Image (tube, rainbow over all chains, first blue to last red; front, side, top):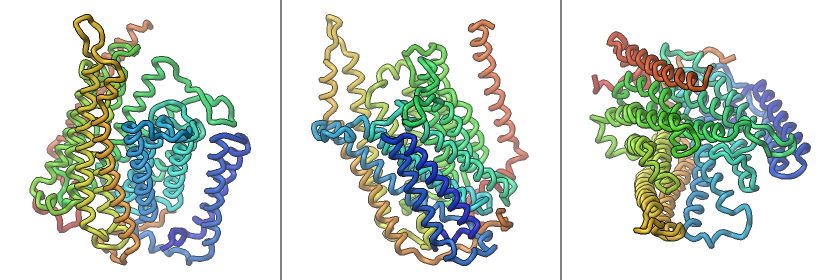
Length: 546
Length: 55
């Protein structure tokens, strides 16, 4: 069914008005900026707005009005769109990552064109996978989980589209801005002021539609997965706004100065940066884990009360952990110690969640053996436990003195992002795609098994090679001879990295191959969509949304 | 107020406030009277015929 057929004519008209507003905004941006990245971004918004006006306008009178019966069904069209965008960003973001990994081994392969430089492409990889891949997966699954756990349809049909399309426009602005050299030089918060403001608008809409739907729920309780998704939405809004407070140099260019200065700037940035890990890369994905793992295993979560305790533990402790990124800096010593202490304490709620997920599978190990989708989720829980242990360990000051600035940190991040975040996303995707496209199973079930082993092999090769790389680097940098001089020059430590960089490229390549296989498999499944409807999968609350 | 006093208040108040809040969460979450409701919530995401395996 066409997306436009899911909307009433009033909703189509609202959509046209919003799209026209976007086109006008884009035109104004392009007109004020005249040249440079902001002008191009204005042009992109203009083209997208006009395209949407034509898309919605062309179908304005095409479809009969959806009947009131639609309130007896969940609204999954936005989730389907979000999954498609997740897969596109997965291949693009991971593809750039593998290319950059290869450049570290063959730096001479960098083309002599500015936009292909390592410094510009690196944030394309990080934003592409964190926001493009992870963000779309979170938004798409959150709409799905929210409706099922609340037993009600999304509160309205237009705002989910505004959230998803607006968020992807932000991601596209970010990636294209980086390759043109636009950045505000804050890690994981590189986009400039106008993109940041746009994201605030999108995110507030996301929060409102989430709350409105929760308010209409037909269950007395709010299932714990929603708590995690809500923490993700709320805290990311707070982090994004505070860290990106900046004064534009002019209204006509993507250039600005942060209002924070000196060590406060560093502290705000890493308060943001580490909580981006906590609430973007952890809380939302825990929401995914707490829903999809029990459903796939057909067993309730091992301890619901433990899930509540770990939720509040994560919310309380993570907030304070960011200063462990600033050990041995001008930041007051006690603030560094505070960050270190809370990072160690974080192990308790983190392992509580990981243990809770693994204990849920007790008695269902036969399913884990036979079902690659459930195995993705199991491995995600294991890597969540491993990477949070490693994170607490690396936050301890003397350990950090060895690991900081080395590839150990990069290995740690990838043990979390590949082993935990991506694995739970793929588990959720393989659960959702057949269901949302009316089938019993994926088009190629064996390819899921292949993907699983490619992902496992890729993650292990990547992480183990960078553990070796990082510890070697750290030890080489602190080695002294009898005379007190450094034993190795810096370039010798770089040369020592070559075998590890080759291995990490191979590991990343395997993981990318798995993601590509998943994308092709999902496409085949979508093209062979069936008409299977799960009669039990319906809202209890059927009152009209408006 | 001097900088030292402010830092002292922050250091003392922060852990007490957070520890206290976590204690409230602990008491509420682990109150035995809530167990039946928690079990119902945990099962609410599963189809009615599933999950009878685990008590």
